Amino acid sequence: MTHPHLECVEGSAFLNLAIVQLIAATSPEEANDCAPGRVDRPHEARASIEQAPHRSRQELADSGWVRDTVESAIWGPCSTGSFEGAVVQVVSLGNDADTVGTVVGALAGAAYGLSAIPAPWRARLRGEWPLGSGARWDEGRLAALADRLAQVDRVGLL
Image 1 (tube, rainbow, N blue to C red):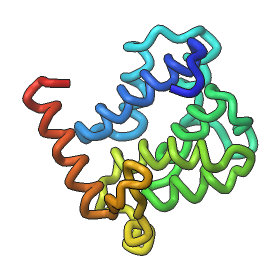
Image 2: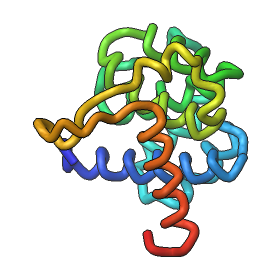
Image 3: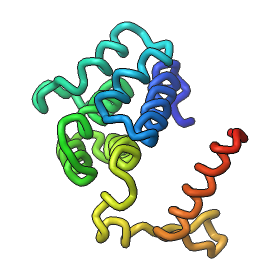
């Protein structure tokens, strides 16, 4: 939404397809293999996605550019076995840590589920939306919203 460059749009489409695959209980590697074929990506971006699970930490550019962000986010769940491991490994790369942390969190959350997120991390979820409304959001309300959205998708409204 904030970066309407074609590669950003394609990266977002890929990530959403990967999340759908992960929620359907495929492994991070299987989701990474399946999703790229469903998004029209430039050759270099497709190669970056396909090679991400096989990269070493030192090979990741992690620059904040969408291609590097997607590559690092894919690498996290493919190179670790837990939500916390994936997020900590990727955020520890540095540079654009907040952006890549958000993306790897979405992938790892879809791969490992809500219960895999450390309880102290879940307990710190909070916010107000819409701003100034006084409506407080916490883990319970966010989980209920996710459940409602998943139900909407099941009945084919999305």
